[in-house]
Length: 56
Image (cartoon, rainbow, N blue to C red):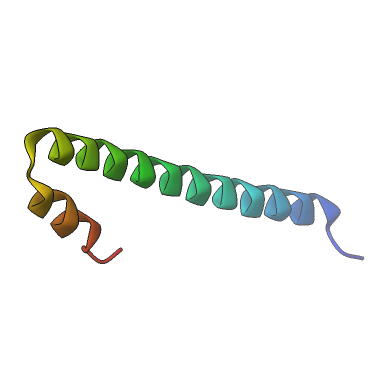
């Protein structure tokens, strides 16, 4: 008989991992947005494009 408690915990952890991944993605977008805004106001697009080109 399968252990349903372990299965429920695993499902919960998988959902939590996905939520964390989504939150990290949103934070990265917010950081890039701030950097682009700063670059726009300082007319330095080199910084923003260099940051956006960095590998994940």
